[in-house]
Length: 205
Image (cartoon, rainbow, N blue to C red; front, top):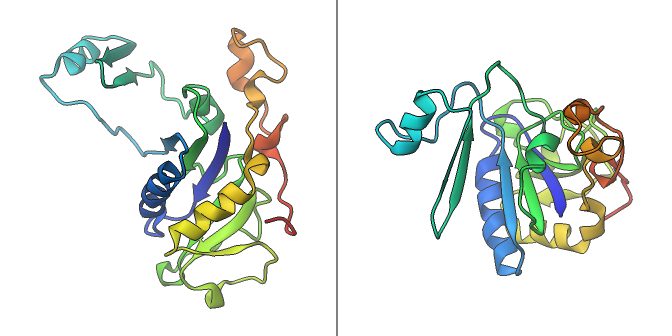
């Protein structure tokens, strides 16, 4: 599995870009999964549905499946903020996992930046940013040797990813030093190994 993050402030266009990349990667024959960071008490279930009733009754996890799809909803007994690595461990095998949000995760990522958004850029301080997708390259706040990609050309961004597939090969740091059944695995320190935490190479790609 290859993993790439997409970071940027709200309103920068991350969701639109990820949506476009899914379609373009699928056309290239790739199986794609997505992890999305949400805020607060989001819900994907509907009151009155069986799965909602089971969850409301106190189930820790509800898994619902048909011949077409499977969904799992987990209720945290205490408030918790899962890491991108913990969520990646939940995925079935795929070619690419696109991680939207998780701005501070130790994953190689493409920063989505718009000058009109009026927000600061991340790439100057984040060693995991490997490229910048923007609609205003002339307005970037800091000089950079990183690839600058056209935010409005998802096909070019897909070509960038597919030209550097090995760079995004993922090995979970959760299991580098822990048995998968070890309860302490979820507390593994970020940056403990693998391409997931590889540093950027400004001269690459």
